[in-house]
Length: 133
Image (cartoon, rainbow, N blue to C red):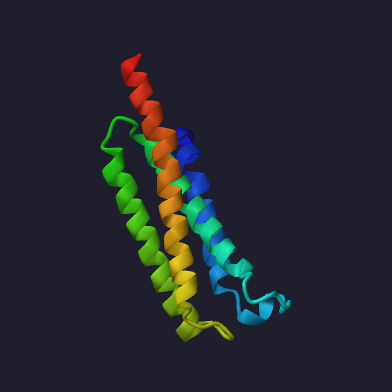
């Protein structure tokens, strides 16, 4: 049981953190004035979703290192992007002072793809190098 949780608990914990951050009311965020070119919330979305994808890819890599990881990583990435879309609808319809933001959705997708690329680089490269050894 401990071995299973070792791989999954970081991914599940990060998912919980992402959900909590995405369902906070808009009034919970500071209203700082940023230059129009700088949108720190988009950077936050990229980082949140990159880490989300990476932690789930890591969990699958630890659980089944010999399985078809490329396919699994793609499914994780697509699922994360769909999760971002669902959360934008939740924000629009159920969270006070929040709205659907296409920019956030794009940032979520960029983060998810970045997490996929990082995971492929870390885990698939490692798997190839261990096969050639």
